[in-house]
Length: 302
Image (cartoon, rainbow, N blue to C red):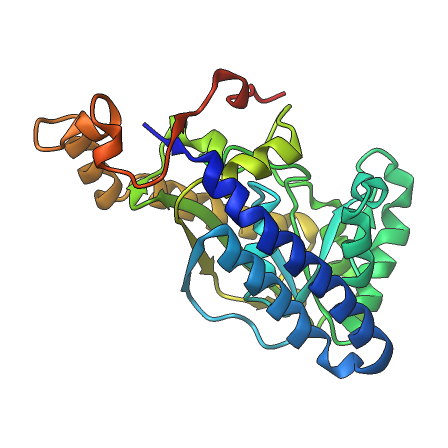
């Protein structure tokens, strides 16, 4: 059973607020006076947040060093912190975020590309923005599901923004799929009942979710970087979308069905595991006061 400490949330909120303030003004300065250090300050900012949130990242595969369109599955706003701390790339995000108070300040200094999920006529203009960023020597991270999921499966990809790979003047750029998965919380594999702590999807409120995540222990994240291919290796955007989807969804299934996950859950369901830590003797197992996740936090997905 997952536990949550409001005291830990409280102790993390102050350094997070100070770091956000520092990071914002640092990026403003870099954008104005030291643009060649953009990704140095960018990664520093996200690495600080990853540390404050208690996230440990494990990387498999090689990150493309070329100008690349990275394609990744989407589980939570935490994906931005995880990817931003490791990959020199700017993000493609839904246009609604541009109207979110405070958050839109950070997206503006981070050169975020906004796309409209409702206005399909704007896709051409959005592809032009992605093309411009790639030609300006920025790699780009795209979440082709178009929304976030619970992380147990990958939603169908929307291939419209991958249409850029069909442009003849873009054939030398690369596409690299990334699989992101939140696999452990305090060393325990994450199953369905743990997902609402880590995945942000459906009707979940952003700020209440972030507050409760700050009150958790250490989260472990796997980043799998699959083989990058040139745009010219794909005959069209649908082939590219299918290539990325198969690699990412296949890795998600392997992560969720690993021997380690099965072995841990067998222990949880047997007498080998001491369940008293989660039932009758909580204080002896945790140094911080804790409370169980309330039912409201387990919001159903829309």
